[in-house]
Length: 295
Image 1 (cartoon, rainbow, N blue to C red):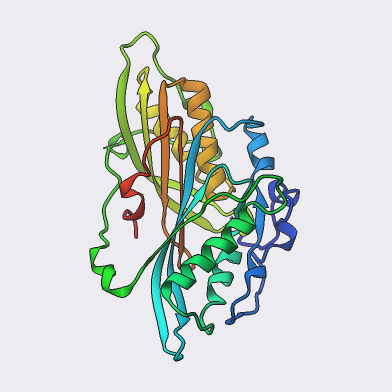
Image 2 (image 1 turned 180 degrees about the vertical axis):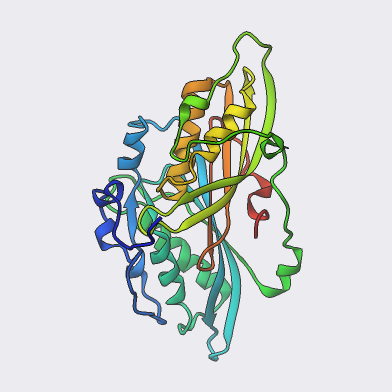
């Protein structure tokens, strides 16, 4: 697949993408500049998969930034790992390269404290995520981990029964929801299934995005071989992380009709950032393992 910066047809009509820095040479700005954030509306890609009006899920996009630094009032560099919790109900998402450039702009900027940095991040992200909406800005979670806390960070796989154990033929490399099926004649089950074979490509650059995925559901048993073939079928698909997870969620929800469903993807970081979308049919705490796999 070509890694040209020319957006595919699917991306060309996405509002705001023409102004995004993704796929273009960018000037490195090292003094605080919130205008670098580029929000993109979620609605057009959601409409493609039948989502209009009230969302059929709740959840969040869980970002981790490994390259955050600023100066203290005496000019000494400070560093942190940042965790961001971006509500799925926000009307916009943040284009990832613009997020990185925005975070880079902190590097030569003095702040009074880590708390001042955290509050500035929260305010700027909330403004961008709800920009252009008639809704009042919602809450964005920001947690900074300072160096003395890094030792408590662990690496682990997503818990669940791995679909990758199955020896299947795979022939589809664009989303093939026809592989999804559940048997309503069987007693309901409660399962947590995982795969480390998730791969899709950036909507703009075509560069590969590698991830692990966890699907937790209750209801009629889902055919596991079909589910694995379906997940593999994203291998040549071009969409942002958030859009891929919502497509997976909706395909399973509409074709398998579970009673409950949660889909979590943990993507390998690129450019110092990872994006880990989580969508669920029912309110529940954030998955505790969402922050620690594939770091």
